[in-house]
Length: 118
Image 1 (cartoon, rainbow, N blue to C red):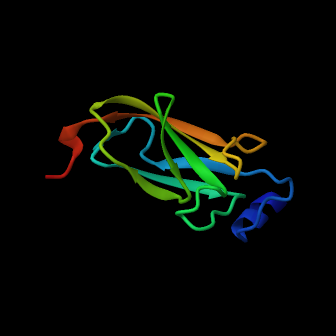
Image 2: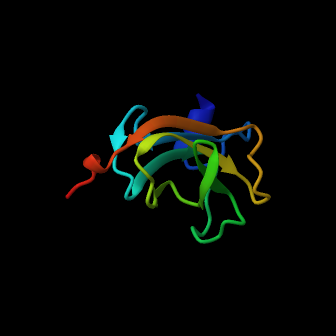
Image 3: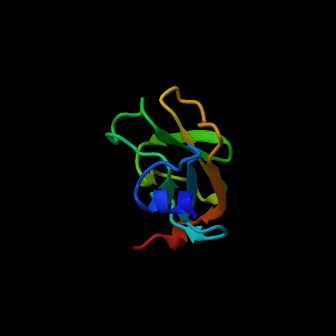
């Protein structure tokens, strides 16, 4: 309960843990990949300047391949080809290694041009 209250206050949890969850796209969703829009919920880690990737950031992977590094909870991955993808995110520190304890999440999405707005 106390960790939850700390998270609401925008502070790191007393145990030093952080978490990340993919909110958009949802697991199993059919989405547009031009761009692939992603929204996260991050707790226990504060991003600095979004252009400074030498601080805390999110590593973004598609089918295990690094595609983006971002310091934000909302971002777009450009030009993702039509296919079924595992979208994975993990929180990383200034040394570009995953934080300890590990904080990551993944979903499976189908990217299809037919899901794009005309």
